[in-house]
Length: 458
Ligand code: UDX
Image (cartoon, rainbow, N blue to C red; front, side, top):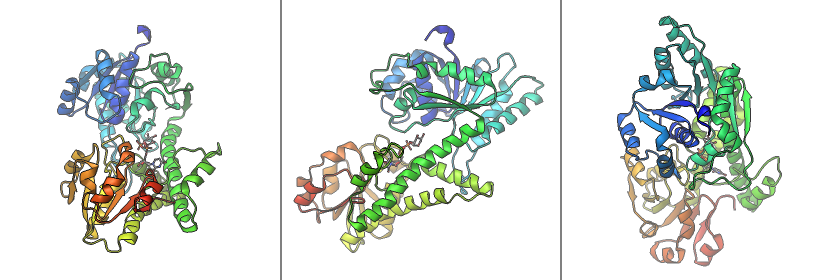
């Protein structure tokens, strides 16, 4: 990037979104200030210690370090920034609505510290309900007015679509970049910020290579409100696609079809597409559960029913419990059985447990009186911390897990689970029962070894 194109970008919040965005922009040549009010997190990041589990993050931190500063002093960097990105958490409230207090607190800080010399673009990257850009603008404006500062306030909604585990890949090689703003100055500045990604002019980091056949991303400019709705609708649609295939999987089991054949058969229709048609134990994570609830709540606030979204959530809940039903139908009595759970995180390549199907399934099994053992390649430490009262016996390998079990339930599709030595496992287990909640094991191999195998929709 030519130095004249380089921008000063302040990012508030160093969670998944803030940190991956900050590291990527710094790698592209912008000067980035990543702000977090948690001093421990800032100290760790400054010492080069990563605070999230993400593929390629350590290497990118090393390669970007000359362009990035981690700090808890927002005031020091704010007035001189060209772009201010709000990437703080928006936790769910009990009613499904989003808690915007962190976003509003940042907006207040912005309004308290801009001095009118520079007009930055304020970017909402946190997932926020429709109307939040306006709310941010109003808060900033009101603070500025109180301080007697007369300046334009430019706010843009710029949702992220990154998947955990491959967040840096998704940031550097997106399908599209959506910018919703009502002022063309905001759109132009963000186009400049994203130019290296839009034109793919950067040399790819070694650890995050450009995907083969990657096509230049679209730059989609919309109103702020449309951008906010795009984010929620995209996640709701993907969640719906998975719930759809899970619902069909239940029917496939009853009529004797194979859901993987069905998925392929329908996914090859370009209008449908193959991705996110993997039947399994259901979806979880930090986005789908929260965003489906939030869009439902928005509908409710506007007096509008959204039966598709409602069913998407209900089918997902049922899907998790289907795993327990399958175990029960084979074991007959769950109480007193020892069940080994493979995988705790909501999906592979992350240690994130937020709304993970595994945790729900484990709770249900414990309620029914089972003894539960669990193994996960990276998420066990988090699980111990986040669920200190979960009565699970954690073991440090698959072979320690299978030992003495009546049944195994594979819930997260970690790659290493496809290399399990089932021949050995057969000798260590009390009963040979396997529930494959991600359809990733070789059914025939297991059945030849005498296992009672149940996949999803097969
Ligand atoms: C998702 C969106 O993909 C991303 O665009 C958005 O910004 C954040 O939410 P993420 O939550 O990281 O990303 O995970 P994703 O890979 O989308 O998987 C979500 C859940 O769906 C996981 O629990 C996964 O196991 C499940 N899933 C996914 C399926 O059950 N079947 C599939 O075919 C795909």
